[in-house]
Amino acid sequence: MDLKDLRVNGRRLRESLEEMARIGGTPGGGVQRLTLSDEDRRARDLFVAWLREMDLEITIDQMGNIFGRRPGLNNDLAPVMSGSHIDSQPKGGRFDGILGVMGALEVMRTLHENRVQTERPFVIVDWTNEEGSRFAPAMVGSGVWAGALDLDWVYARTDVKGNKLGQELERIGYKGPAPAKKRPVQAYYEYHIEQGPILEREGQIIGAPKGILCLHWYDIFVEGTANQVGPTPMEGRNDALCAAAEMILAVNRLPARMGGNLVATVGEIHNFPNSRNIIPDKVHFTVDIRSWDDDLALRAWEEVEKEFQGLAAARGCPLRAEVTWRVEHSPFDERLVERVLRQAERLGYSSRRMVSGAGHDASYMNQVCPTAMIFVPSIGGRSHVEVEETTWEDCEAGANVLLHCLLESLQEK
Ligand code: HGY
Ligand code: MN
Ligand code: MN
Image (cartoon, rainbow, N blue to C red; front, side):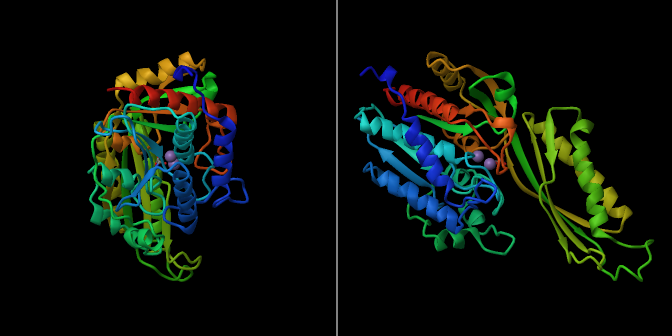
């Protein structure tokens, strides 16, 4: 068979996605597979079992990243890699991350059953904790592997209950022996849903991001004075929640204020003691700032932090701001981006260039090797919600583009 006519098995891809969606499935039709939870462990076990079916060489590293390797004709050559993440948001969707792992698995299955011999080895990967929801920050599995994050610092990260990431990795049995350290890679492709409205709105099937925005994460702690809500006069209160509320709206005004291409969001907040008849004295909230222009994002932070200090002083509620995590914007390899567009066209799928507003492990892989992504539409532009949806036809189309981009790289001598 001419490899150009090779296609993935769309039904098998759908069945794998549907089986994974049953692990951590929620009543609203989404999934909750928080990183290093028992649901994450069960999904990892299933992924490993599927890798074993193809006699792949399986490696689990110190960060719990799972690699499945298929030999090539010349195993001295650097491998080609593809993958994404199995973990999800709380009440997340059935496609975010898992589509890229199942898409890479489907390519592996297609090569395996057709006995395709490739020049280079092919490695598929599930990266630990891409979401950064239970344990901040995000993309720590690929971040440590790429040498951008420190292993011990990541191990010490805690969730809201005080569990440590390293201990949870041990608890689920995925703290592997292999060093979580980068090695030469020929090319990395990540297949993912768009998580936005553009492809659907423009009527295209395949998105070829030119890269990913920078992601800057901060944690803000506001201190007030707790007291009984009845007898305490309004004037002179140090109400931490009111101070935080004014700061949160300052974040929301930031993109307009900076006049540039920037998004800024407060997604998480914890209020203490959180009793309706006590004036709150401690609030912790998060800030997420993203832009293609890293300097604009940094200036935005400087501006809003100054505003926070003013608001804090006016209410007598001192604040502490932590710079939790920053990853630069990631311009992908132009040759690979072109390849995605060319393969989409050859396969008969409409396509367009775009930018990824969502972070991905490809952000860190882009620091290691030539990297590109393949997007398919999100219905209604929705993601990180239970109603996240992509048609099975589009899932199959994206996997075919992934197959042929990978094949091109796998045959490079
Ligand atoms: O934050 C993100 O964009 C990704 O879901 N970790
Ligand atoms: Mn994702
Ligand atoms: Mn996500």
